[in-house]
Length: 164
Ligand SMILES: [Zn+2]
Image (cartoon, rainbow, N blue to C red):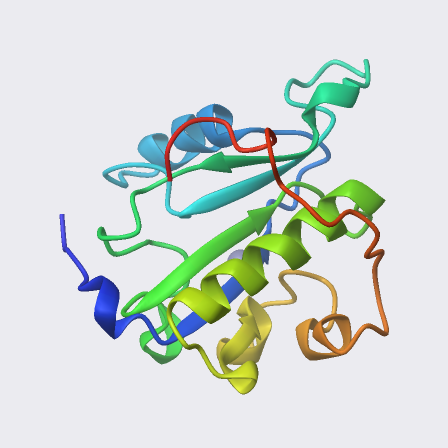
């Protein structure tokens, strides 16, 4: 396990799970099966389908879950030194994300951007650092500028499951 100093965190990298469903626990299983120490991302934003069943769960729509602790280096972007000094966030989904997921992403990116004084230009999509990837299947800077995705919920209160 490689630790990272929180005071050196200087970028946020956004991913998608490339699956129609999932949760921190599920991705942890997928990543352990690939030989990782733990789930590769620091944060996971659910889409209302934590399991492979088709049933939609309102309580899981936009739900933020902790993955790796922030002081442990992630395993989410090998290219461009992406894993070091970064926070890796995974949106569950392939190309479609829910309004609540967009809202949670906005809240969490802004929370950590301010906490760690991360530059606006250091908010990346995986594909911005690895040209072989399409992940997260949207343009993160366009999203950050408000051109893509919903922004209506102003508080994450009660929506964080467990400590981050
Ligand atoms: Zn990715």
